Image (cartoon, rainbow, N blue to C red; front, top):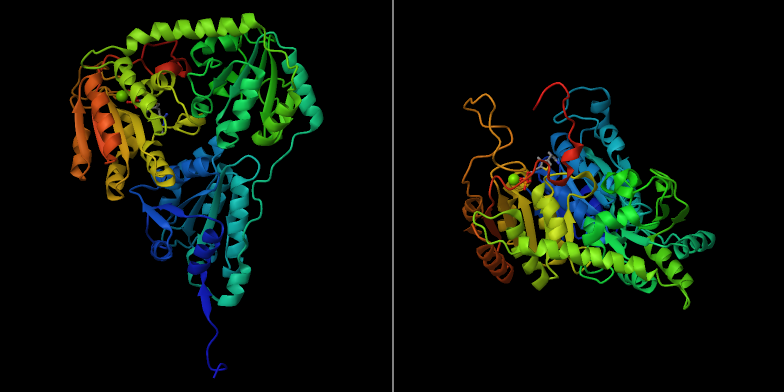
Length: 570
Ligand SMILES: Cc1ncc(Cc2csc(CCOP(=O)(O)OP(=O)(O)O)c2C)c(N)n1
Ligand SMILES: [Mg+2]
């Protein structure tokens, strides 16, 4: 009889999976091990896609960029202590870049950690994670899993997005709960990233400043790309007629070839503009903190700033018109204020920007036709520029120094959220993690343009790429070194300079080792053909593109950040 049937039970394993699935999480990025291996098996059995990597840093980077691409938190799961630590760089990078991700790590029991009794992989992970992320939570009881996961999701995506750490001690998973109680404990988060409307007076103030401009400029940051308010952003730029600059991961919000694009006239517009409207762009090191010679005469600028984070205002220089709110709501409010009689920006300014842009594009053009072999950066990037123009829906991942800085300016983007790179931190090692998640989350072909040093940080994931048969074409710019391959050991000793790698290496053989397609190219037209073929086939491909070792410059465009000795020559 029914009195004999024991009540149906659930447990921590099941509740973690139910809570994440209930909130639309579909993919796990992970490296298995104690205490999460069974959780991963169960998740896969329940239809979640579980992508297993060779190092947690790459799994974490994948989760971070999944968050940027989908506006849902990317989820990375790791084992305790060393696995957790390996995920921290990605968690901190996500927080720095305002990408929503949740790092879920198994951990040791509190009673052992707090008495420091030497558990397997013992570490006070919650305390260590807290300073590196937006929020951090620990769940000790199965009935709290629903609310804990809800808190983590809301913290990751609300306001300024960022990384969240969720600490799950091993014993939580096996805790048993009445199934009905368990279901009731789950929380489907309602409106986790609510619109944040700007104050109408802030909008009026911003429009007044913009209207007064003689030489206005709009700067679009990756916050504007993340917002997925693409129509509103485009409408504001085109309705105002103001020239615009796109930061690296904002490229493609409007096509880089747009008539109002000032990308190829960056130095001029930063120096000469008199009113600058920042849209989801922070005045950090990437914009020289809004001061110094980059920005012309001191005090010659008025800044309007649109950002969801109130504390961002006045972070570096005075903001005369702060507009606090989500990008979509702010764009709509500004558009409503730009009525029929909005004054077009002064024609002399608009034509000066266009003239400088065309002149710079004209100067660059012949360099991109270079057919030199071994290739230089411009010749190789000229070929890849052509591929991206023909395949605007492909996703471009990019890291390195010369390989990054030159690609950013040379390869035009045509659609939003198609360029994924080292972002605010300039961190190396994001390449393969970002490429995997871009392919998994979008199903689009991915072209990863990698410096040979940058590739080395995550190169083992070519096996992961082959295992999941992902449509990723990796182009390694092989100049045999960090920045270039010509440095020598000043002592003449047998050790090579710390800045160089072995000459004539064949990264393409790595991909072949795992069943992917490896191609070795030494000329731009070969590179163009090999990438086009890879994008058509959708097969995991690695192209070893030989670049002249002498072609690079130290630290690409940011060599000036290097400290120099006044007492000795390095
Ligand atoms: C985690 C981390 N460790 C080191 C560094 C410092 C660095 C910045 S750029 C770079 C690689 C440059 O060489 P690559 O071969 O990739 O590119 P190229 O100029 O075309 O030769 C390093 C090591 C950073 N930014 N992040
Ligand atoms: Mg290199």
